[in-house]
View 1 (cartoon, rainbow over the protein chains, first blue to last red):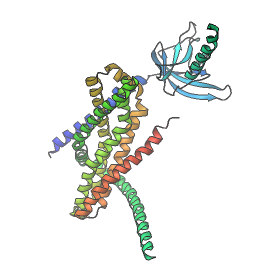
View 2 (view 1 turned 30 degrees about the vertical axis):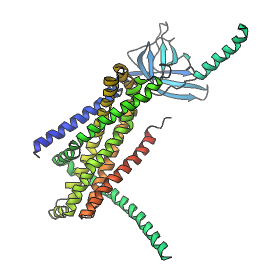
View 3 (view 1 turned 60 degrees about the horizontal axis):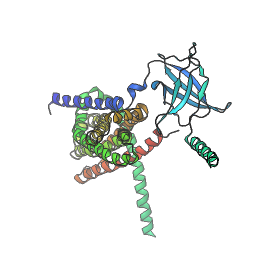
View 4 (view 1 turned 90 degrees about the vertical axis):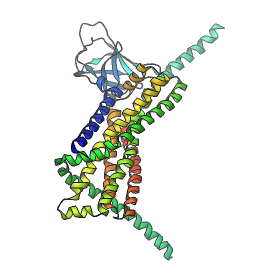
Length: 156
Length: 263
């Protein structure tokens, strides 16, 4: 086979191979949305993180503003300490409320930030004071059942 | 008990033969790495091998990928719609292709399409004493014949696996969105939110790279080690395909257990 045609074919092959890799990275995967240029660290303590995972999203008003960097257990307070990387473009007030929410009924869990009204902003390395744990579905159901059981005799 | 003794000897020699071959293959890999410097100095040889094992495998890889994606789309939709979550079809198709099917099936196809051809080529070169002739002309056959074929396979394999996955996702899209009518936005957005680049895509690429090394090494080794007769070469080709398939599946298990062990 002619050398230049061979080179052309190999070049073509490598090019579409790289296009396929880019397709997998950008269109199939979430490389484009998961990278923040510059981040700062915030911490939050939760009684129960439920199914929250490292690299899970941190959302405010439904927009992804950061990612969970690390989760560890604090043996002194028996709480879960969640470290988050937040985009430096977004600043949050001191009294921001962090809660663990679920997207959809069975979707992934994420940290939702509800903004407060404080004038002072959270700095890098600060800890979010007000948190709400994940809702454990079993607890919710048992609570509901207990309530039902307690109100049934009163109706009669 | 002479019969039993013979049996034991035969069994022992089979085992030691395998271990000897494994050691030889490891030494062979070191030799390839030593001589591969010359391969990269003469890229024209490498291009020819990428053409040989990559470009010529394009059709089979892309068509199989498309059909695997089409089947995944049909089967996945049938199962998912029972649970009312047919929008998750994109996630199912993409994750199963990127994580497992892409690297593994592309690897198996690559072994039977390109690996066997490489073994046959080197085996026939050995049978017709071309390798010896090269040696006589002070051309090292390791650097001239073996190393370019090895690297050609190693470079082509990840690209082929990525193409396979891409065609598969396209096939799933064709069935799910175009024919069945799953919502297009949900198809892509759910896929993007659940397929992680590092966790899924990158691990798939690493897998295909490892399979490429394994298949290429087995192919060149079996060819180089073949008995230089017509029968010996045909046996070596069979061994290439069988050993590569087993190696791919075994390596896949090992790599998966390392990569996707959720904490």
